Image (tube, chains in turn purple, orange):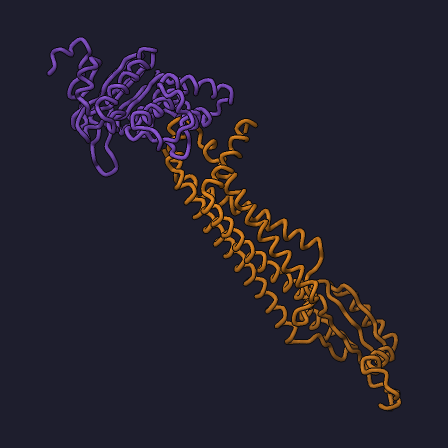
Length: 229
Length: 294
């Protein structure tokens, strides 16, 4: 069991109830889609996984560690084991592709030789060989998201979280990014992806957790998928 | 801090200074102006204070003795003076010596003061210097009560005014320097905050990737200290050149002698240099935590 949510609720300071008594379990190696309309609580769940948010009630475990009881100084260690991919890529505009990816290893204090070999490896994995010296502004949206994915993968995370990674991309590019994520998942990394894109989800035949108004509306496994519309 | 990390921190700090060069120039200018004003006010305070110290230490009591007091009487007065606490030196000035001093003060004229006056009108006296010049008024009262002392003079009124003026000049200078330092910290905090704000996305990413707070803070502190150092160095160069050329031209301003001791000035410049770094650290410290709460 890699991720567990036990009766998790979140009420923000302004009184908005983002999550209401959520309980889920995600095994290592799974690929899970998180679906639901805007404001359903997807982003709150995602942010809780890397502890940008904490629950108002309930418990969350990642790799058997309680995120609720986790001390502040332990948070960086958790985050080194989680890769995050964003809808708006969040690349550093002044840094090249290589620097954007190596940055993730530099900031955790990896050594130079280690950084070089790993960065070349992940840039190849996401199919961006030859673009190492390009700036983000010289890349297409799909290529920028590949840089985002490469950066998330550099520290060999146990869990890859993607928050609407195809939200800013056209359908063809979105499919390419999905293929890349499936490939990463096949190599053993657990992937949790929040999305609106039903077309992508339907084609993927993976586990789908749907949220609505902060509650779990459905949790469908790949085997049960044919029953859905 | 590992050496590998230290190299990374320095590289990031230098890159940031170069990347945000306009902001860096603004910060360096701010620090330069602040430290320059701070240095100027410290120099003014230092000069005023040294001048006031010398004025204060010049304050002494003249105790004039009765004209008809014999040698034994003089000896008794001296013993009583020596028994008083807080007295540094007692010098006996005989009436003959006093007349001679007066003759010299008035200038070597071609007449004899004693024969002009008919007789020596001056009394024997003691010049008394207190350990702490602030005790002079109290000591004067005690000395006046000694039998055989005809009159005590220490510039009553003027001395009290000098002491109270000196006290106020010191207090006002310290408050002024303190306010300037606060102003400098505020300005540096604001400029560093702008530098950090420009890089908030980077900081957010660093936090999400798993870097520790100190890993993020170090480059900013190095940047803050570096900018503080550069700014204070510039201001010290300007200050040293200006004060040096002033010393070359004049030794005094309005009969006030200028402080020119190399050690004093070197200490002042070193302190200002350190002040630049400290202002950089405090300014960065105030600004950085705001963006680390992810």
